[in-house]
Length: 382
Ligand code: PMP
Image (tube, rainbow, N blue to C red; front, side, top):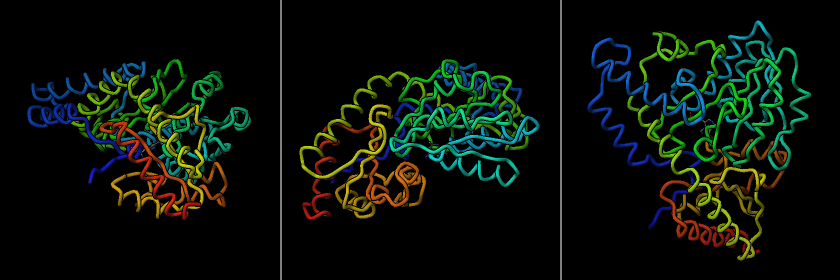
């Protein structure tokens, strides 16, 4: 049976060129980047090159990049690091109800440490309101964290407008760009972003590596203590091969962004056209215009997530319920709860399809027809 992987928002296959780059690093470059000698210099050079590639991709300076163990650590360092280092200026943070748990749980921790957090709601299209953000902003607000593109629905937030709104406010602006990076162009200066999180495994890179962009002069308290690696903000010997793999994935993502954007949008439209023609009932979750090209989150009224995912898996199709961060991916999604309320039927009947490397138009069509068959079966053709 052909297996069709449509869960790229959860994680993505590693690009062959990334594997090759990492294999070379692991076999040929093993020195500790902190060592003075030739072997250390060799590793340091790999890190420097990677830092430059990564920085260039978002219009940053190399010294503004901190390599991390992934999106979670980048989010934690941004939120907790910035809050702890700036608590003398205030103890208030603003975020949204639809953030990834790496942000939400960091906020919960900060609340237990005496910080106050405002969680902005979203409307039925999954968007925050700028007016509401403006109202929540206080003199003692030290961090505003709004995700770039949502991992469950793909909905994009108005990052540039938020950057504008915060231009004359001393609060740091953090955005979790883990899902958006590589699929939409990002320039931290144009967007007015101070902190930005990225993870390699969402862009066909290795797992367990990512980076945090931290604008020059942004104060961050370290979360890992030890040596003085990563600008004294993150101790520990760097994951050199992982970082080299991340940089290779970044290069490829930059080169292929435009093609992917149009290809994934076409596939999304194709899938929806097949649903429409079939006569099944379906509702797209989230703002269809302002969303990431690779994520399609759809409710199939009268079905339930568990049956849908099991039946899709039996048909060889890997999809998700929306929340890629819960074991088995079948827990009710908190993002859809924030959009529609906890009693909405959409929470129990929504599926996330996400496209990426290795998918073809034929696969997308096949997955769409299989989905139609399953929905018909589960709803007795109703
Ligand atoms: N933020 C978002 C929006 C994500 O989708 C993810 C991954 N599910 C993360 C953060 C965490 O990244 P990582 O898996 O690299 O820790």
